[in-house]
Image (cartoon, rainbow, N blue to C red; front, top):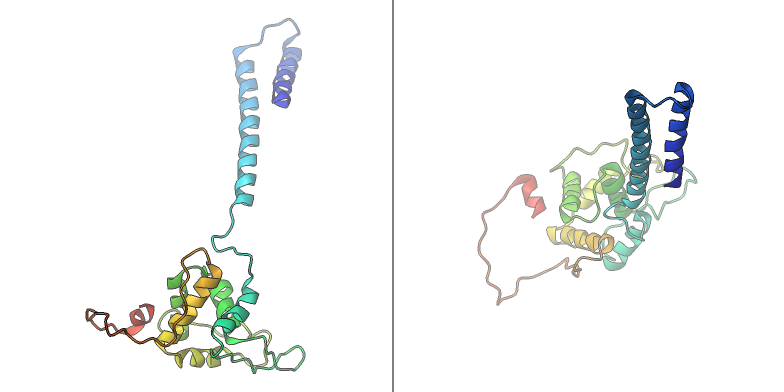
Length: 214
């Protein structure tokens, strides 16, 4: 505040010097001084606001856990889920055991497609990509293509296609529980059978990609 007052006084003193020390300031000079001070004040306030907003906005799905660690947590909860980790590394010629199916699915979902990991629908859209019922998957940007001797995209698509719907739903539930633990978590149930006391209303059959999003 003191700096702004000092700036205002300095502008007026310069204007008085230009027009004579005892000469009254013209209306044009006064307006010009007010405009300059106003622009500087507003500009400094806007800069602070923009700076504050840029550093306060965080991704909605930002968590303490990193995507590179999630695949291990998934396999802890789904130990029978396919790993597909027999591919050879380009760097050292050894089996890249940590380059798993879940690892690649997560990287494809977040980095290749730019989808948020906290929404169930987004994960189902990603699985629909693997099943050929949603968006086209391209070889070059697929995770592992740049680090493995063989692009794992086709093997991964086949592995996902062999899963049952209950297994896919269990995977989605585990991923949601990990990335968004603030929601009410549910236990994954890969193999579920309807309760004999539960009454269900028949639903019309659906076809194509829409069936995958149920």
